[in-house]
Length: 241
Image 1: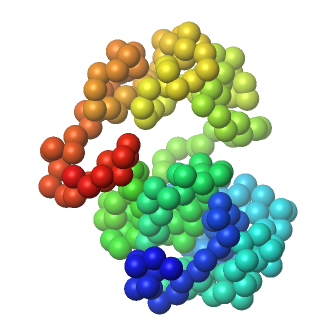
Image 2: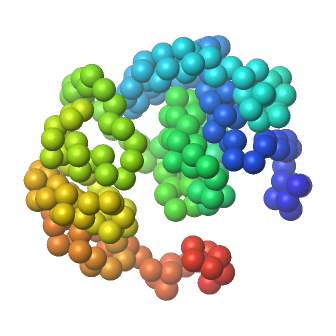
């Protein structure tokens, strides 16, 4: 129990590296008991039918999550109901999940929780990651137009956005926003450069004008720690500045 956990009304201690199973168990309970927000989903969420089908078919039940996490199924059901019904509700997961196995998919599962319960774009809500925060009070406009139907999902991996753009498989990406430097972060630098040339739109956010910025249609300058009024935590050595 950390000093933060000592202040909590509920302290849940899942086994290490298994937070995603806890989130999936909560999602299953919220969906199976119709505790989600259908009005928000209809206006703002794409792909809900697909995730609902997937979660129910995989039977990621609270009982399954108990076997994975060590958290009792009854407790998982309770916190899922509390989260879905006590509105607004906010998720804060900070950088700890980034140091776990399956961190990317864990972040996605937590984002699903916020989306299906309507806790995005509202004051006091959000799925708040230390390095990627969705603020409240945005008054999000409804999604307009028809969403293209896809026969397959884009596989997860650092190089698949390039493969998709260049080959059209499983479908062709036309616009992206990246973080950091995909040219050095992906296995095939030449392929990534050619991808940037073929994209219809590319936005690059960054503190420095790294090589990808010169392929971008829009460059979004990022504030440094010296331009912020808040206390920040350095990612490299975890020092406070």
